Length: 463
Image 1 (cartoon, rainbow, N blue to C red):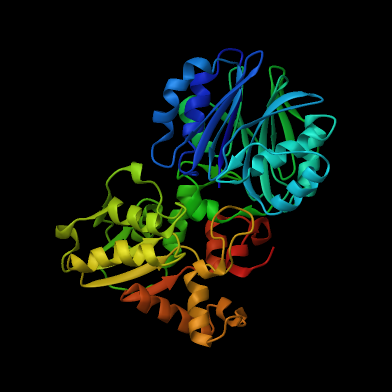
Image 2 (image 1 turned 60 degrees about the vertical axis):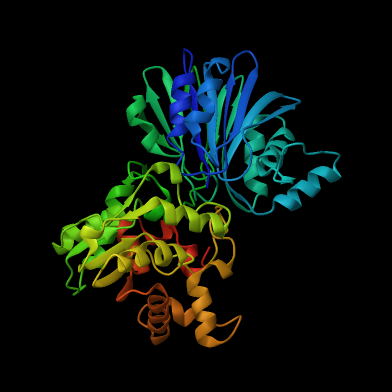
């Protein structure tokens, strides 16, 4: 997924825009961009797949003078996009997954439209959204039209002469929060961008809600859709520990997950650890609940390697995971180790780059404890898992049943023999002494929102 940051100030906003956008670097690995309005729109976009945001954009700051701007850390497309239309010029940045991009693009081209911003030879989803906005009489009606036409999930920021328009997608899969500092307003995907910049959250946008940040203040432009189903994975893995969604902090939820995993877990062990970084808080929760000490047998060298989950190819994912985790033999040798992680997607990273390093350095036992249930369905809302073939649980189900299209319902029930058989096979493939997943019910309790307010599609296939 991508991360968005927008700001409207009474003075030059460059520094706050720069650092506010940078605080979303954990979300995207492909592109990043900034746009400001100062009598006219100015933007810059860079590839951040091999270097960090700050190093690419620090030299761009002198030319980005303005009192309002938007920034994006993008998981794929080049953004922001600048568009000129009948009601003026605007810059747009988006977060989410436009599932019907090709259908909408064909419709626009059939009406004489064209596309110029190509990402890796493909039509840019953000440009498609921008063209939909431009087809209406004003920005608000254009954003509402976008929400009515898309399948998937799109939240967006639009920068214009009036200020920054922010809209949260109608299903509420991703979040946007507005904040204030003196006379300056900001909006962010991740609330971790606010504290060090001096902003206090003042409003969390509701699904389908559009607001305008301007010199006159924060103005609601429409009514929300009141059908919130926010992505549960934000708390389990994607989000930054210092961020909160729906007022619920990420770090605390992960500690709750670890405590749930420790409950009724009668494993005798010498230490608990988490696969850095997203498994760390889960492990701390397990340690605090169980009384087993937390230690660090695996440490991450630098943040520069990024997340092994998000790079585009399996080869790059494997390389990143291998290089970034360094084992400490004196902590590992002859120890019974509980390893907590956020999830098992493909299974290759945990097995090849964490579990094997622990065994090679003399671990006596390794017990894997996973903070979310087995992932069963590719995400239709965010750019994460794209096919069933990527998911180790689905591959194991095919292996057990011998069928390409088997009934997976029995495998969704953690009390069924089919579920236990699936976990046993995954345990063997990982090469661990034991394996335990958190249940969906416990995960929902750890988050603290009613289940009907959460998107659980990745685990139960229900939209």
